[in-house]
Length: 160
Image (cartoon, rainbow, N blue to C red; front, side, top):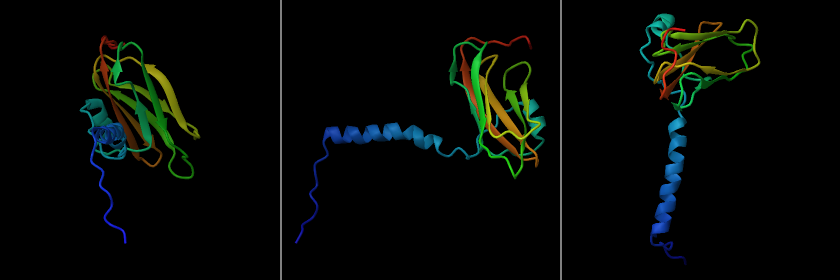
């Protein structure tokens, strides 16, 4: 006959190991629900572009550093998972800025069907702000992604 399982006393080392595992796993759990609705920044040009439509928060990914030392050349990466055929195809990706003098920073158009989308570039930012990317599909569907950037030295102040 077996008795109850042996209970080992909780040592300081085991407690710290468990706390360390939770500390490392916390950011992974925070990033997991990518499709959860995010807060859309209040950008008048973006609001008029959306015209009351609600984008989905999936497939499109916008990567910017959380801290940019210089707003003159901030690295940016836009990716969108394919495949796009036989369903709706990607027509364009619009990039909006919350603080820049020209709020619609760029439009990437796709006249032919791309196998995948990977855009690596640099953008000028006028200060700390949110940057929004909106992908327009051939069926009128929208996908969006938002990134917040803290800029220590602002650029793009004169509308150029």
